[in-house]
Image (tube, rainbow, N blue to C red; front, side, top):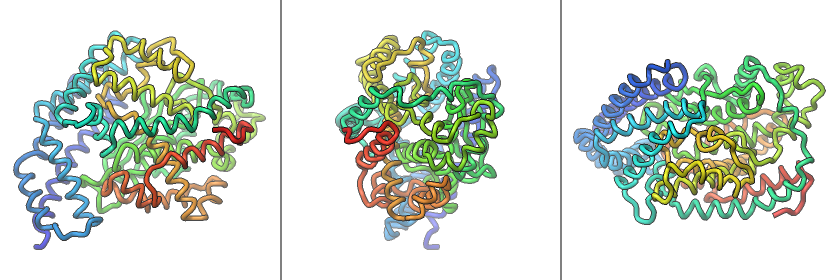
Length: 506
């Protein structure tokens, strides 16, 4: 057989993927259904399977088979499934071989315990209780960076895990450009705060009705519930067990219905990416999103560019009114559209508007670097958080639950992830601009709330490829350009300039 080594390797990799998906099921259950007393046993189970998967992937047998398959497939076309698979596996194999099975188990134990502590301490506003877990997570991230190695900055090693090839200096440059181009608009809007009334959003919205509306909204965007499920958690997330089982979660707040609604749209965007990966790649190492930034582009695109558009709500506002008849009685779709797009500094990242959202990311990016470089102690983090919130957004949390404890990421030792949210905003705007340019139907379809043609474009240009191509190459293939802040800046200037009656800002 011409592909004997490759096919044998592929079967072994699919077996490892099966173990990883079993891990994902345990993790999903831990976040959604597991009883409080189950944490110790679940942490052990996840640690055991993590160690097994790591041993299987980094063993000499797989390494020898990988080398044989590479030799066998050396003439395969660059963009073939085979060549793409081997590029990805070689890169991951060389990286994972740096970590001992004992480290993998310890990492799982630390993050498992920290995740449970975060959920409990966030609810009780107890940073002191979470502090030792966060200190362990920071130490773990620092150790990880040293194992990976780096040339310029320690943070580079962590950032590269989520956005391969991206340097800390690149992120600083991009963030500076976004700030320079959007801060004048934010400042101009601050002088017109009375222009938009969002009081309609601050009412009692029954959770049962929210749950039904979230289901409707996800489905309206294109999320396939025959291959999905909507759950309830403290911090919304999505997870994939394969392209035919991709689940999403949301968080309900009775006094603020749009929080759950847009969280659901966000997670549906992530999930539709996974549901759209080519069937031939399912269960393989490239059967997943290519980077966190590209993944966030899909969630932010559907949450904001679609979910907060006038066209979407002109098509679906009646359904929202059906679920909340008394709350939305006498409210027009235009009033609702303006309310959900009000620009106002907020304490909570996931509830921030499109303009101020990036300030939340810059705050976390700067604090993460300080923690990783040991320039900031975990004990001093709440005070540093409050200071930067005042500096960047002009607001300050009264509690740590609405401040430093609001995100799950650091309990997972996911340092380096936060910058990908802003990268996702930029990719989303660039993909949307390219889609509209390449298919004239998308503009008119979106204007009447139909996402079908847009989703088809994303399926063809982004989703189906899985992680065959890294983010810069995928962006170049889909849009013909490298990543730029310009499409995002153009989008927000047009949208918010019209909403607030501003012209020639920035």
